[in-house]
Length: 320
Image (cartoon, rainbow, N blue to C red; front, side, top):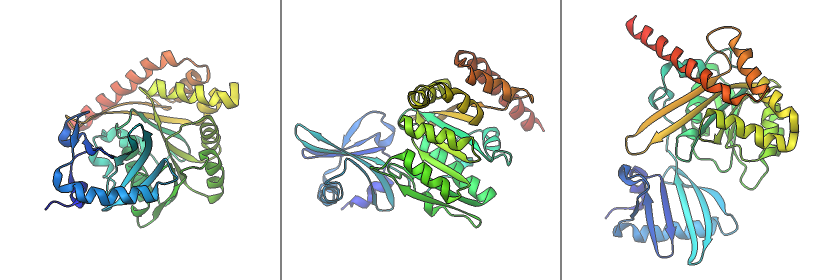
């Protein structure tokens, strides 16, 4: 008989559990298709449902570790009773060189000169933002050492397990807490890198921007439809609290935005990106000036130019 533990090996993004049935989403690459859980898993699902009810009796969002997988659980009250949507994480964080990012981008992100500022990973739900960010953090710690602190609501991947000889990441579950308050506390923990698992509100964005210009390397995820849109969202939400100071603060602290799109059927990752620094020394100030002045419509040409530069350099490296 198949056991519930086999779920860890199946290809799905979400497990939905309700009183009338249970379903898997993205099973075997069938995008947006819900597939009923097989009959021989029903008894085991009853056990995990009991665990969910006990753990989440007073919580709407919380992490649940099952068979070595961290699930991000979201509980909703429907007309037919509770619904649990369990977003499946990974048992291991993949090597940054094996997730589909161009080597050119990896080298830029892991530049020894990138010791502070803000690196954003943007995309829609399921695009791989968190996985890519965690792969970068693991690689960063392996290369430079030190320690990172991850503030997540809730944790999705086993970052704290991925310690290296010279580096370690400490994960903090901030479910039900203020990310902004936790950022302030973390600044006193002397972290070399701070990971923010999704910027959602003005207070968190304000503190993240402030930390990025005060000697801290901030890696964060944000929901957005493109690199320009990610920066605009930061400005829009940050301005609600900090007003006109948001754009110059972002311009000063900005290092890079990496936008991800993942095709679950083709299993293919596509990337758009914008770095503060470009081909020439003055490019950094040019990009920062566009952000400072709110000229986001002009960033498209910069994004294209940086992508063309990457293509040329990668072709040159292959020839050599």
